[in-house]
Image (cartoon, rainbow, N blue to C red; front, side, top):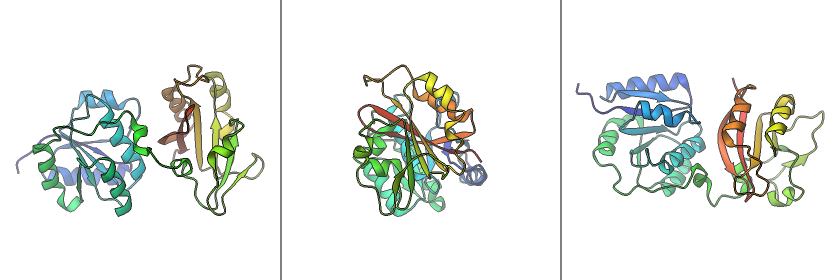
Length: 261
């Protein structure tokens, strides 16, 4: 069996990733698994620069879309071919509309798809300004992932933010923080001191599934020096793991966390 170029597999389930690595090797493509898409990614990619990225959409397709947008926004990775594998049809079509110059495949045809991708990388790849481009044009409630029937709580939100959210889906409602846990908490953090103090107590609501931590954008008059890496590290250090980023409005960005298993 002839071995081909090194590829990078992006997959968010360790056990399944090992099976896919074996499948890639069997197809003749040595590969390594990259699960962390945070600040360490550029360093990892410099150490092991791949000939193609294989992004599995069977789990966390929105995260796969976000990572792809981030890769296309980075000068060092924008020209490396992207191969998306599997995924629900509607999710795949959304990504195809965003990145029509990528390759879309199944695991049964991954070998020929990778051969095509590596042999014919995009000459003029679609570039992104940032990973947030993956959500451009979507309504805020959809970007936040607010579903019908959800109980949503706001903490330290701007006064007019409920109006910014608009009409919630059927059965979903805003609630006050109290004895009953919300399904989702949107916490607006203005300074590093507020983050360091609150991260120890705010997310401890029993039963909380989804935690958005929002911070002021650099271009906002509210900006105090707080950054995405600092927000991400605060969550990771306290048992939370992030998997989605969102541009809330002109002043705020946010990361979505869930409890680490």
